[in-house]
Image (cartoon, rainbow over all chains, first blue to last red; front, side):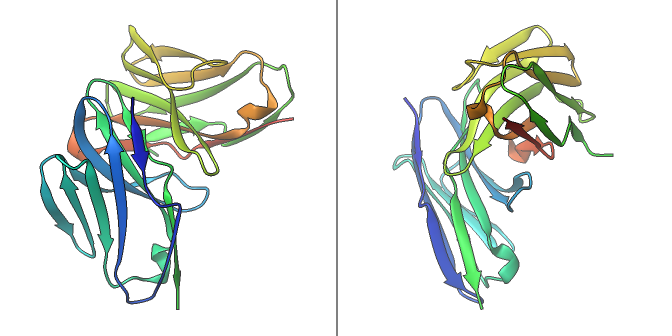
Length: 109
Length: 112
């Protein structure tokens, strides 16, 4: 079977750092994606990890541990515009991306 | 023009009606996907296709059918719509893995 877990909601303040965790159990793992989605809009690509370790891209970083079935997305210097849903998705080899239910992040001033 | 275009953007239909959601892409990608999104349930895979002759069921294919008319076109049909098919539907394409999916803008479907 396949299971992807991430927290439902998180809150943070402007300028802070927030870490969104994702744990997964899938067959045929072929990489993990993070997407950002604002309400009513299409998801947009943030990061991709296929090997263990940290990938950094500006204010956003993503980490993967394949042995632990674990990833996190780190957002630094939070801004109000970062209020959105963050989707963890596992690339199941030979099929499609399987998404978690998403984490809604609310950033307050 | 958008790389992945979904039509219509919004649709209200009655229970029992047949409806088709269309998706076309200019990315030249072979792999295309249909998902539905419901509040609290995330994106769930309905069907996917790796080329014109390849169609595969996803997690929640019951009540849906698809047609891959060409490399660039992948349509989703609801043969007899029911209210619990009310959702936001996304089409996506995929090229090389590091770039992930390219999503369409979505179709908001309401079945009354």
